[in-house]
Image (cartoon, rainbow, N blue to C red; front, side, top):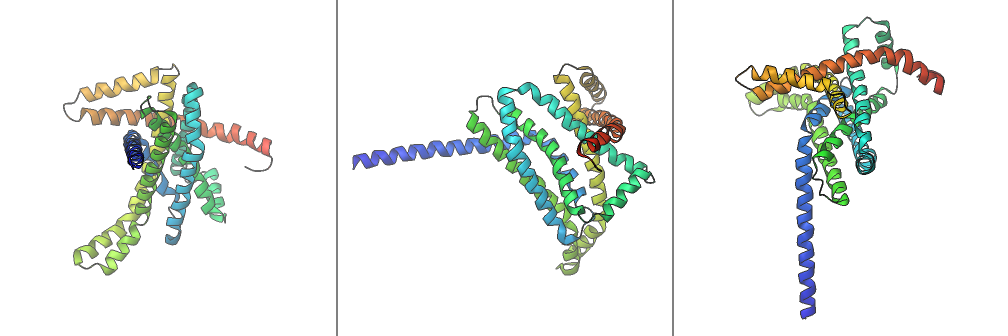
Length: 321
């Protein structure tokens, strides 16, 4: 009997340790995830534009496809890669992130270029091709997952850097995986709510119990097209901002400190000239200048892509890209 009681005591002790470990993992995951809040907001702002223009019944399935692609990016590709690189080749992380940042700059600048040049023959041909493409939904999902890969890489890197270096390798892997799930659920849950807000507004306008609820529903329905357009603008701005920020910080870590230090000095100087909201002003100025650099890099990459990369790709694979 005493042996059984001792065994039960041991089991209870192990259970307490396991529970403490779970609590620690959850706490570390939530804390580390919060460090990537800026990139998470960018991800949530970028994604709804990929759903814009589709029938209402396709919105949630598209969001679900993108969310599954995002989880695959984070858990299957980026998590093992981040752990391997951080353990054996940490010096490769900045240049890889900079390459991803350049892609974001290019994509954001390309959208700005098309908006500023609606009669550009290249833009017109691209729009016509997209409208005639029977696989537009799949292409949109693929584009969203590709963009998510870059943002997810930044999120995972920021989250990894926020974890205590004393964590064991298994604990670090589990914590990073849990952070990836938390962030993905938060981002795409918010996206699903955004894209279905108009349907909620219609339901409220038609079946609200009070005049106030019905009026609120009508306001939501009338406001959602403009809100969705605003999200497209915010998402595009987020691309060039995040891309520029990645490149500036990556250059700093690789020894090219002038861009980062110049932006920092300008932001601090402007913020310190004010008496209120200095932290917010410093952040805004930094983000704005990062975005200007990102947009400039993106515009430089547009002709490079069309005149160098695209012909090279066609030569390698053959046919049209």
